[in-house]
Amino acid sequence: MSKHRDRQFFIARSVLGLAAAVLVGLVGFIAVRAGGPAEADDTPVIVQPSANLRAAESTTAPRLSGSPVATATPSRPVSPSASASSSASPSKSSASPAPSKTSKSPKPSPSRTTVPPPAPQDLSVTYSTVSSWDRAFVASLQITNKGTQAHEATITLTYPSPVSIGGTWNARGTSSGNTITLSGIQVGPGRSITVGFQSGKGTADRIKPTGCTVVGGSCSVS
Image 1 (cartoon, rainbow, N blue to C red):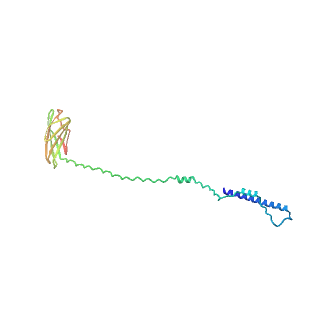
Image 2: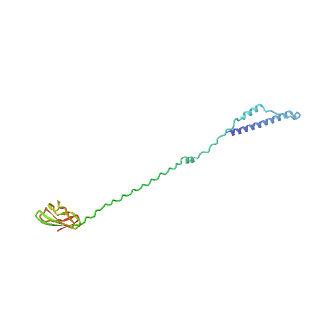
Image 3: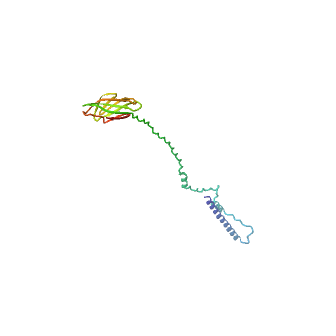
């Protein structure tokens, strides 16, 4: 803005100066023509410009006061991509810690069960029917211990029909349905013992056991 005003002032001042010079030259030329050549002398004639011309010069070209005002040049626009990239770039998130490895608990070892040694097969039992009648019978059993230690024998007898034990000797006896059990039989090492019982039966026929077992030995029916 100040440069433009300076330029206008310079142009106006030049025009006024040129007009004044032309006017002075014209006045001098008229004066020389009016006086003639005989009246001319060596003293130059200076013609002052009129008051109106000075006033016009002073009013046409105003004087600038103060220092020129510097105009601010527009700053370079910031690129939106640059600002966006600088402000909107996400910060790197810290990596989450890796889960710690859990130690595997040791598998419990299976407990070893102690299997007792099998009972020695030292006993031998022989069953026989002593007598039989309409609704009862008498039986005896011979038990032999072939081992070197004493045994308490338990014998189980199974019949084809229901039986009911009456009396026993050298043993304790129980009956249930078709079964008779003899227990509490003490047999020393290398010894034999005979036990017996009387039992009722549900048939008039002669019967004998279909099964005979003894703990720690074998049993046979004759």
